[in-house]
Length: 159
Image (cartoon, rainbow, N blue to C red; front, side, top):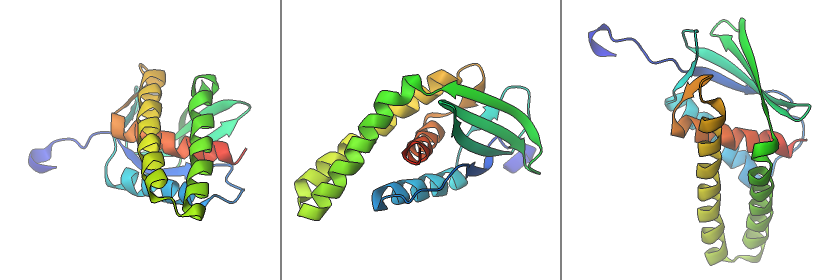
């Protein structure tokens, strides 16, 4: 930044821990786009720590785990969020992925567009929930939360 202004705390990298199963084409595209978007711009500021950060994101024992590290991969803090509040959205995401695959297979362009609109709305709802669940723990803006919710959906599909 110009004039010596401090760079806002941000994610240098996001690593999805526990990736083992094959993703659908839509899930892989969502994952890749979220990672690209986060690399370009994000705001991620855990309380009491300067950035940039490396985030190891995983799902363990029904919890969404944020393993936050400094840019040298030294652990700073771990935060676990119950997945319960996200379950309906995660289930809806899987239904949309399945519907999308069927619409593509059948060549139903209007259905594909409608599903895509629904998916965007679902990601927005997930981002709002992510911001609310992290409130007071990690400052995060909507677009960063939206991308992280996308990655949570991808992780959840691997369980």
